[in-house]
Picture 1 (cartoon, rainbow, N blue to C red):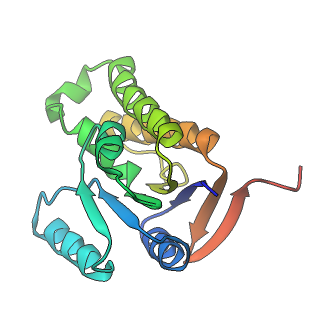
Picture 2 (cartoon, one colour; picture 1 turned 30 degrees about the horizontal axis):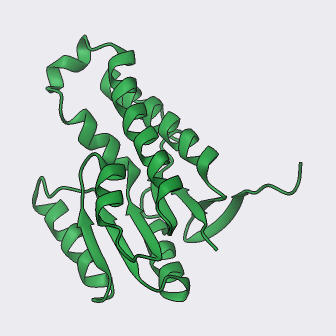
Length: 188
């Protein structure tokens, strides 16, 4: 049965490990959608480790933006699609803009770009006949960023996460490697 699961949590909370273990148990044919780019040596090492940790029979699609369109074109016979991660996807959209622009760019302009990307992904979630594990960071639990760009990023990623949570059948918040079910919430 097709299922959409959103995994949220902080950095190093166990989101990717949870997704990989879930896929090994339930996935069958897996397509791993990687949104990160190797902008520096640290990211190159992280990406290499992620690749090494994935089973060799999983297909990988590297897509830094337009992931909905790219997944539709490349899903093939995938039974489970892991998107790792929305946090980097939003970062990639922000990276289209020069850092100096963040002093003057309107919130609505960036929000529009990210919302369009997420709506495109939501259409893909409905069209593609596979289950999805979507990974994203929960960045709204920490300190208020001390600069406008950081605040915009936090707010816009939060909105993207809310949109995806609405599309998801299940949502988990991971804390210290422990998944806590958020949706469906049976205590209301």
